[in-house]
Length: 603
Image 1 (cartoon, rainbow, N blue to C red):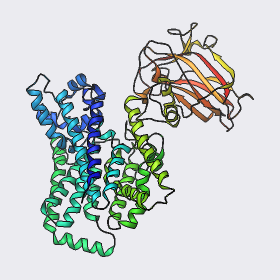
Image 2: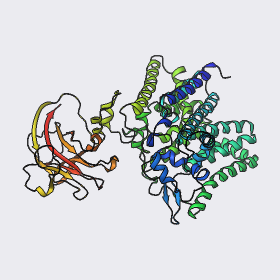
Image 3: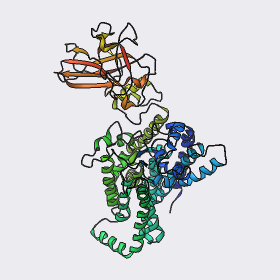
């Protein structure tokens, strides 16, 4: 029987998600910060294409939408097929699940002054709040699942840990319209329906299982692994495996119905591909794919860029909880553990293993439904079995994980947090900070960063570009002082190197501070295409150590701006230090550098 605490925890979590959404309603934002932006706009595009513009093949309306709303910088949500039609990058599952909110929003737009164009405020708000509601439904079913195996207070605290202690919080509030809370809810409904099916063998649960798996796979084809849950749930040994086979044979009409539902939903995508491209199958992600033989385990789990356990450390308790789950719930352990292993392999094998601009490893979020069970096992162990002296320590660590997630969630939306290209140096520079210092962002490029008092500062080089004999490699259009400056543009991709030969002053373990002033009349805001200032330690013209910054991170057009980096002198032998500018993106951009200084200092 469910007592008050788990209900209270559920209502608290639901209200908390709603309040957080109201604090910063993304649907009032514009352009790429709006609800229908980036990937979400691609998932959603089917609906306006079909029901507003009647243009699923060519998407001729899309350039106007991009010009007016700028949901992403370009038309990269679709590509041109061989027959000239435009193929959606993302499959149709999310559009199917957005549909109720879309139709209501479209009706509201038609009877108000808002444009009925699919991207005005009614659509932004409608899709967003529908997504938050969907996440809350997922928590409701998660509560029902956990209550089957754990006592009430353990269920309540697990709900709190999932909601407040993981990146589920961001993806059910600020970024709710992404796939993850939808897939979370589908997996929760699937797991609950599986439990109920084997308890009752009722038709409705077989149908729910088919709908859940079908919609999940239509959203992200890799989620076809959801089929493992109804197949393996409750199978813990050979005898139970044989029983499962007998049960499935006995209820074959229900199993066949489930399979037909899954296939019918998947056929939606196949029909779309055939209609638009002429082909039954399309790989719409084009140059993005998997490297199953070379998965990025260390990057995914504990890199500063997107380490799952770095940004969602509470899930370490879930991983450790598999031990307790195995001891106390052997029947459900294999299904959950096997799913976790296969799902993790798929996540780590994706070539874009950081999954774009995201808080932590967002690809794990939907699996929190199943990981909540070993997490509950950990909480149960702490509550009932852990040594008395250890309980306060475990509780303090668990509480610290929740507080860290809450604070970094705040940082990600109001502070200096970097959601795509975090580095160790930048992470620790902003740790605990709420204010955004733009110059800290240079540490997103440099792998090292110094903080503290610099001692024994000695000037090594001062270059104003006035005495360099080869003026053909310089520029006199813009300079901070004097006549000349170093520069790069689309034609001069590398500036001439400024060289510092090795000397006894360059003691390993000490630091170099490289600073200069930079100017550009035209900026490029795509960080992967920004010009770079490169500092390279060399031995016989071969690199020993290298560090870069992208000055554009702190610059504004037509303003001379200082930027620089600190780099530790390597222990490996080197005979030269070279400093130069590089137009890494090879694009039509100019950047000028003047008043370069290099100093040595000690910690």
